[in-house]
Length: 541
Image (cartoon, rainbow, N blue to C red):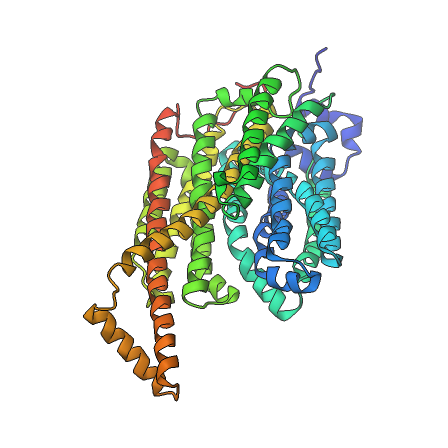
């Protein structure tokens, strides 16, 4: 059955149109009138979701004291949220089609807000973990659905602006989380890192309900693929759990980690087979047939490794070797985040006029230049030494996100855009988890390796070593410490200095590897048919 569409002139002359208010006619004449209000609403929701992935990290010691939990137990506060999050992200398009985008997005924000309140009010560890799972399930909708909404809220020639607004939240959110968390914990108490979501989330929900509507091309799903949901949960949940806990259990030396890897791998294979053989899949893997999306999704995973890996490593470097607090660390990182936001604003306005392959390549090499500069930092490095490298990193990442997203979605029919953005965000998130896991493992092992190399040059008969020990011993004795104790403490200080130097060398290697890894993904761009964000109609043409 076909549906006829009346012409604008016919609609304007109809009795119902004559009785319509001027405001309603204005919206009908300009479907993009509320685009910036929509952008603010969905980006605010996405930022809240992303900030909550990292804001809890600085509050962990306080939570341990209040809830009487061990470090291994309290890690579930972060792990449970991320696992729930990545399970929902690829399902967002299907859920949006099942419930309707307006109801699904608004409902997800309400779930996120309610769970946030009860997270702050939790009096036991496992109560907090339970509400964090619900918070993650609600938050999972706020990335892909928000990005799809922004694609449709802006006219084709301004879609880059919408993606730039969204990109600012995606890039800046994880960066400001620890800084904001540190300020809140110091000024108030850890429950307020959750309570702050309540008023902001309610504002976002009200704006979404008011301005976001179901898309005209949206395909309503009629069935629930329970088997697909179960396989997705096992595949993505086991993988995320493995990445979160692998280093703690010494990776594949642990039977538990090996079991998680097998469960994830087998479930993923069965999931792909299942979703390719049913009419209404939870994840439409067929969308990856696109020569634009497939390489873009893979590149997004590399970008996730580089972004989240570097975001994870830098605070560790500043806090463990330079003694910075969470707030001081945030102030060091902030200029780079601002540079990233400013660059994305420029990309959103003018980036569409330049081939995305050129911009992404420039961004990758700027990121490499930044990581090269960071690899030259020493124990004596101050904030001034980090300023320009972090500005470079921010500009590089700003050059990446908007062009990469726009070109990856080129040619994707509007009715399948939700599946495409879900896949894109899932791979970026999993890439980020992989990046953090890799960086944490490398940091530990490289530090041990470099320390072993340095220790070879420190011997009981080495003149430089003896001179250094004597200097430390006499300095301690000058403070009133007896000779035997001073010598013992001098040895401990020397060992600490060697460990610190080994750590600096390990960080140096990691920075370089991060930059080279992103640049190594550039050949994927050769697969693209075009470097332009080509708008596509709902029928795919």
